[in-house]
Image (cartoon, helix red, strand yellow):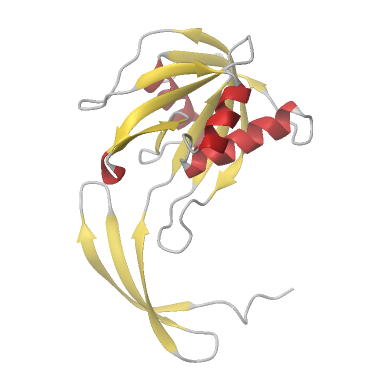
Length: 196
């Protein structure tokens, strides 16, 4: 099946903002019917999210203050890719930095696009198990509370509106599907320590 009747083509592009992290652009595009329009969007380097599973079945989650929302948010560990970094390497690094945990087994579940209307961001979903605890190394100015929660408690938090982070809601769904056997994961052993 061809998507030609839906595809928009870039005619020109201008950078509106270039910060330390965000790159905001405005493109003039050609529409499938021959018309023109503009699209404003954020260029994002990509990110990972980790679903760390303890031996007793609980999962590691975090609470941290998210300034744009002016509130503390419950979420799975996550972080942006550094230049040239693979998703797995980033997942290992972020898990260790934010929680102190390392994992001997990893599985890549998939990818999600959290804001398709205005960002190029993608988030790779990684699962980690056979965890062991080491030292955390939070970034300067980063304050994170680490918790271990039962899947049922996380599910209740989603139902009650205490878990609203989109990527974490997707991760919870993936966790439940994998636990039920509907979405099996392909686990691989990892012996190399993350580089931080």
